[in-house]
Amino acid sequence: MAKLAKHEELRQRLLAGMADAPPHTPLPTEREIAAEHGVSRNTVRQALDALEQAGGVYRVQGAGTFVAPAVVSKSLALTSFSEDMRAREMEPGARLLTAGTVRAGRRIGDFLDLDPRAEVFRIGRLRLADGAPMCLETVHLPTARVPGLAEADLDGSLYQLLSERYGLEIVTAEQVVRAVDLGETESTLLEVPVGTSGLHVQRVGLDRRERPVEATTTLYRADRYDIRFAVRRTPAS
Amino acid sequence: MAKLAKHEELRQRLLAGMADAPPHTPLPTEREIAAEHGVSRNTVRQALDALEQAGGVYRVQGAGTFVAPAVVSKSLALTSFSEDMRAREMEPGARLLTAGTVRAGRRIGDFLDLDPRAEVFRIGRLRLADGAPMCLETVHLPTARVPGLAEADLDGSLYQLLSERYGLEIVTAEQVVRAVDLGETESTLLEVPVGTSGLHVQRVGLDRRERPVEATTTLYRADRYDIRFAVRRTPAS
DNA sequence: ATGGGAGATTGGTACTGTCCAATGCGACTC
DNA sequence: GAGTCGCATTGGACAGTACCAATCTCCCAT
Image 1 (tube, helix red, strand yellow):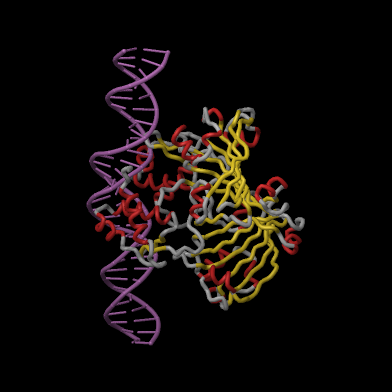
Image 2 (cartoon, chains in turn purple, blue, orange, green):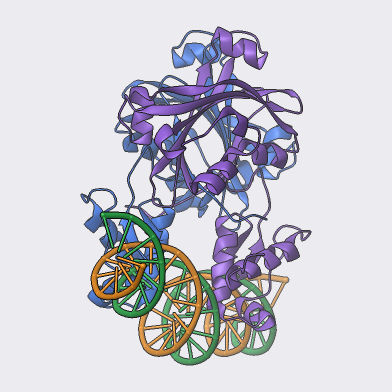
């Protein structure tokens, strides 16, 4: 059990306390929370900042802090396919299509900050949800950074593998979302009619120092998948 | 000129200073910045928090704070169509298609927290970028909250109008993104072949108290538009 | 009843100070 | 020359205090 920071533990406790409160229910005041939990108001504010960021509460100066109503969605987080599916209450699965070493090429080389001729490990998988096709996923990893990676390792969570064996922690990802017309092979694998549309997500996973670690292209079935997230007004300039 | 908070002014100054620095350039230490700008270290941290959140810098404990490389995109912000297009260096435009009062119906009533029979003002516009069709936009506003709104008001920025005349400030929005097959009328208006795919964005704009103010459905041409954003790992639970 | 103003309440901003934890560099050892 | 150990540096975490700004409430005048 890792030792948690006070503000983080407080955040979780507040979140748990809010679990079954109706929207717009006021939380105790910051000063009250501070006294009640034996921490400084700074720490309370730090915890509330995180909750606000995640869309769990909203704050109004002079009025208080309130439980936010979940209109459509919470803020987006970086998740693996498996986590994502479980959050949608579906059972994740996978079928390996291809795995091997190829040259990066212009596009992938660009994403991963590599020479186009550099070798990358490419993994193609058909991802399932509740047993039916959900998306086609193609992962690219620089061979140099994952020596000894083999097909045998591809059962479990890729992120977990990268973290535990290679010390590669992906903390940020940059994504580009597009709508595309599915080609023949894609349609066949996803079991949808040719010509229907799909949701195309290009992702570059970055480590703590914003260095690219992994590039993934995912093609979702439009009829089974959508992306939900909250955005906020940010100060100009 | 509004009086800005110190942390906000500092944020802008730091951002300006970083403008033409190559990626991974270290910023001064927090203690140095504090001394240099005559503020406390807390204030510096608050400014850096905002920059980090926006994807402008990254921090490594024990090492320093560094300029983040812009791999594909900065974090997503809530923007109007016009702002969005200008950020993409295109000239925004609009052609009014329909405007009038209709009943909310199940779906929109649900989004806006209204009775399905309540009246909403509906505005349909074809949005242009550099003179060519970019998307179809349908805005829904509760009639009760925008009394006296007329066609004549629909030239300029809708958000600005809502803010100035009705005191409705949209600070948050929840979005659902899907890929869809375009129908005949849609394709015709967007000037693309029938059956091609489009990017469908459903947005609910919320005020400071997370009350729904506006619901917008936007249908983008897949060949001209994509959505870019950064996601971060968030603590479990 | 109704409108308005005073004051208490609540989140927002800011400063000072202290200690902790991760990093990285350099000296030292083998 | 390669590894390793220790210390200075840097961001992270907290406490405590003070004052400001938006909001809400409640009482009073009309």
